[in-house]
Length: 249
Ligand SMILES: [Zn+2]
Image 1 (cartoon, helix red, strand yellow):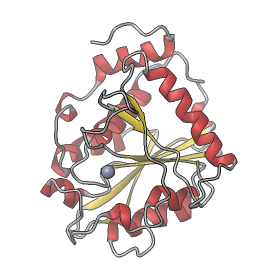
Image 2 (cartoon, protein in one colour):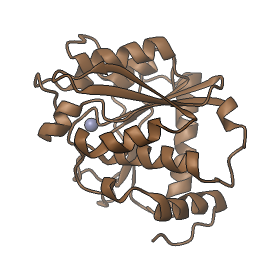
Image 3 (spheres, protein in one colour):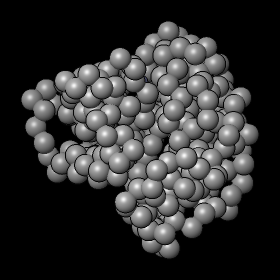
Image 4 (cartoon, protein in one colour):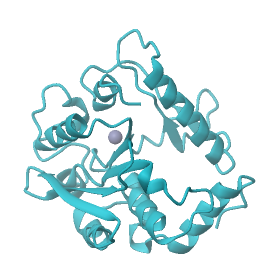
């Protein structure tokens, strides 16, 4: 259980998670077979559209779940690195709670304000083998330019066709990383990726930083001193940097 959060909506969301999360997802590693039933159940919900948007090397389907039809386009994907399952559990719990519970702070018409696309587990073969890389041995997150992996091509096609306003590239990170110079573990780290080697900030990157400030503010009650700022050195071959260059936050 969490200690009470002074921000009422954040507290309500934490309480809902305590009550309604899927126990089977709350573990150290997740494979496709661990999530397929949960994804299928979500797909049955009236508000969700489910589409198979491609396949991994092994033929395992890559599914996108979509909620809402509003003008603000959000796209989130998880487990691009097969051994980084945390966000897969988080987005599936989040969608379940979002569609089955009343969130006190949320406009009742939110589904007409945003379109939310979620791709849980972009790299099911890596998840199966518990590896960072896909079945070709390629790090998908260094494949944004060459697009040698079927999984990387799926992601890039989604970005091109959906044109997200805000994109969430959800990873786990090395547990030895610290929050700044403090010596404290970075339990979570945020990055508003650069889209150019000089790392200048345009309106989209500024919005990403503002969004991060809101998220950090909401969670610092539970994670004081454990929130990191990820290295924003420009990475030519990485998806975050290339997606930022499309104008997405
Ligand atoms: Zn990663």
